[in-house]
Length: 298
Picture 1: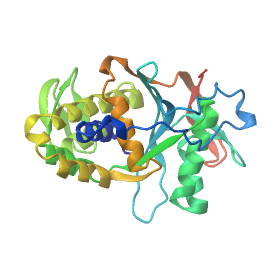
Picture 2 (picture 1 turned 45 degrees about the vertical axis):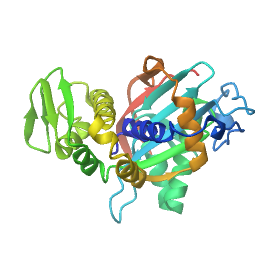
Picture 3 (picture 1 turned 180 degrees about the vertical axis):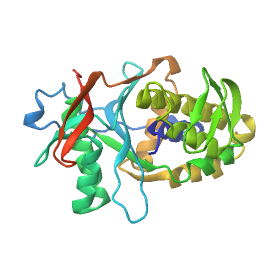
């Protein structure tokens, strides 16, 4: 149940690390296409400019990879990056979002990774999840990063904890305690419980996603404090260990960092994929379940 907002911190660190590199190391190239919408998904969005590396879509996958168990995606974020306009748009896709999977029918989007991994391992799970998002959002997917919750707690502790401000108290169901409203410092264990919590929140998964975004900003702020900048090699190493799989090369990441360096935070937007509540029969679970029925137009 990795919060994919957390992946953005990888880019923060990569940016800081490469700021001293020569601009000549930035390059332009055609972006790869990992998935395009199938015919059944409807009309595709306009194609990206294949001649440049400044307009592309990245799928961020967070999974709960438990030992000896097939994993599901518990967090999905589609990042649309357009450096010509100087904008990055992040769109969260709830795990209960209804999609149509080939050979299955309507089911929850987090089942795509589960079924793919069940048939062909982790890579196959990634491919199925990528295709499901491509069909849902009717867009090409060019890059992906896939990470797990393991190590999140340790990383926050390595930073020395994080500072957050809660607008109202949050009951941590599994920790058996309640965080008060207001400013407070969280250690890794408590931060992990906060980004996982949804049962006690009035708006459930939507509230959890807001808390995940808040924790991301707190981690990023903590990471660039002077005492942590001195420890960049150690922290970058820990972050790289967090990534289970990706199709960015090291040179891609350096180029990305150069593109990011002039990006204003106000031009980074975040929203959840629009839609409405619904219920329907799930052919895998063989019972009626809750769905988030997306209504998204690219």
